[in-house]
Length: 128
Image 1 (cartoon, rainbow, N blue to C red):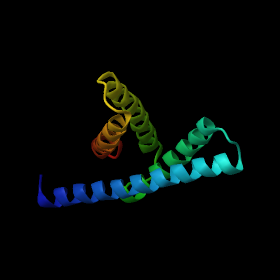
Image 2: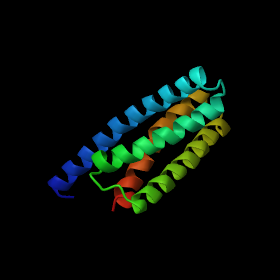
Image 3: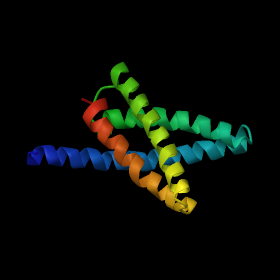
């Protein structure tokens, strides 16, 4: 990998991380607001928050993290990677539980694997 390519990859990775932190906070804010002002139903609130966070994540990651255009092709790929990340998160948490690990270790494993998984797929597939 050439130095310029490496710098661009690091820049995309850092922007992706910042976006992820922002979108995670947005998800929590939307879910809490929904529970407090719309309906005290946590699963529904988190579903709404997930949709909002995913849309915002797509827009920011596309335009800022990966410097790409908003396009149906990238949206479809983004949603497929997001779905893959969801199922991988469920699998990692299940595997941690089956291994007898404390649930916090399962959460940590999800937090460490899913961002890397989604970044790699977005970098080498979604936005190529």
